Length: 272
Image 1 (cartoon, rainbow, N blue to C red):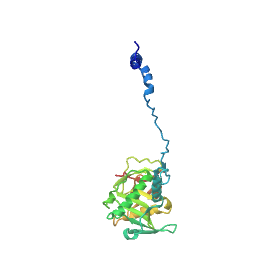
Image 2: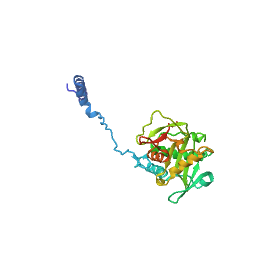
Image 3: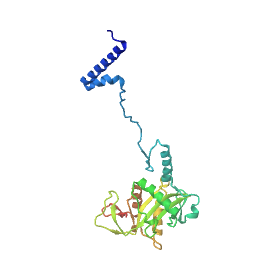
Image 4: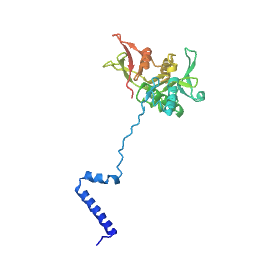
C-alpha cells in the first residue's frame, strides 16, 4: 500500500527534528553554538575611545594666573586679571568723591599721585582693598593675610597709592608687639633675640608698570605717619611679614641693619 505525500512529508520532518535533538544533546557547547550561529546576532566588541586633548594650563609669568589658553572665556578672564595686576585696580570716575587722600606726591616721572587710607565704614573701599590683596597673594604665592583692619582700625590699616583713577600700590598693616632679626641673604633667624615692634607690614605691592618710581617707599612713610594718631613711628619700630624679593629689597633699604659680622638684618614678625 503506497504512502500518501502528506504522511511522507510529516515523517521526514519528524526525522529531521529527532536528528537535530540528537546532535544538540551529544555535541559540546561550542558545537551547539556553531549550529545556532546563523540564527543569532553576535554582539559587537566595544572599544574605548580616548580623546586627545591639550588640557595643560598656561601660567602667566607676570601675574601668575593659570588659565586654559584654548578657552576664550579663560583668556578673557586672564586679560582682565592681568591688567589689574600689571597696571593697577580701576577705582572708577567717582574716586575724588568717596576716597579721601592723606598725602599728595609728584613722582620722578612727573606723574601726580596720592595716598588714600581705606575707610572701613565703606564696604566699597573694603571690597576694592580685599580684591587687590587677593591679587597680591596670588602673585606672591602667599597665604591668606590678616584682615583685622577691615573691622577695627586699631588692629591695622590699608593704604593705597592712586594715580588718576587707579590704585597702583597697596600696603596693609597690623598691630604687633615684637619680632625677630632675619639675615637678609640667607633667610635665617637670629636665635635668642626678640625686638620690640609696633606695626607690621603684612603686604606691600606696586604694580609692574609703576615700579622704580618710589611708590613703595612713599607708602612706608605714610605708614610711619598715619598708623597711630598723633605718633610718628621710627623705622626700627616697623617689621615685615614674609618679605618677597621685591619686599625684601625694600625692607633692606628702609630699615635694614648691618650686623658686626657684616651681614644685613631686617626685622620680621610672625603674622597672625
